[in-house]
Image 1: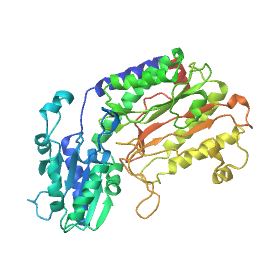
Image 2 (image 1 turned 135 degrees about the horizontal axis):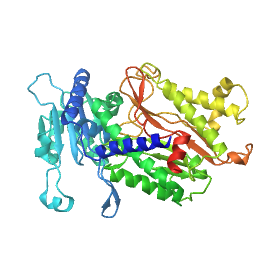
Image 3 (image 1 turned 90 degrees about the horizontal axis):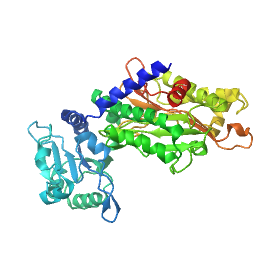
Length: 455
């Protein structure tokens, strides 16, 4: 077993070395996405206006690290603030349809920030008909919106632009009568990942897995939750991830029973479990992996029983994934396995079907077992279709599978079960014939984990 684990770690490390080399999506990928949206806009007699995310101030003269709005990035690949994309579907092929307004380069400012892209670089992007300095949108928006009955809009949460746009449209002699959120259209596209998107997600997952395995080895010698967090996030940065996909969740002992524990200042106590819910972001695509491991490297009898139950539930939930099934089916399968196991362990009493109907399992498993994954860790897309029917899985969708059991200090359970929190999460691609676990190489079997932590 130890030889197999060494080989596994070497394989993961070799993937990570490749992931450290920056590789952006092909620029024509964004042009392809815009072309699809333009066709839908043409049918709707609609113009689309999307604004970049604003630069957020943390405190005086200090700004948060910038991260582009996901929908704006999805259609442009543009990573800078102060940008507007306007799509104007035309009937004549020689008329401009794709307009990109960007902040022009300012050499004096670049002395502080370093080089950034401007109008010339925007104009060179595939499929951009016309690039303009950002300020020209004030004059052109009233002209470009004229004649369309519908406006598909995303302000990128920029309240300044929202107010400005309202004034521009109010003054326009001919403005769209219907306003629709751009996300309502884009979520359909974003649910299905291209081959290039999947490659980027695999890089994010590989970086995350490599960093987790490295941290596993260190945990028995560490004292604080934040030390574990530092080991994992150091791995992300060392392997080339630009940022976290989301704030890391690192909780030991009782803290592992809090679903989104934030503090991370707790002690690592011999005999406790530590739950690690983390994800690196690679070129805007996020991983989302959870592993739960023993602080001392060895599961106790009680911990092992509950861990194996969660693992069995996760495997059963993954096994049902295939095109055509309702998206919530993996969650239902996880609920079935966990409820059955809780009855066998004496945590619940009664018939499994009745307990599920009464949602008694939620005392110990209180969250959904799955969500979409992509540009956002909880990615765009709902779970019902346009008719309100359960959305069915399709080839190219990527979802998490993450059942859990959380026991704090219930009065009716033996204290030996108290303060055990377990969640196991993998990232799964829906394929033509079933599924592929993108995070398959990240250890999760009890013997694998113990062998890594106690070699």
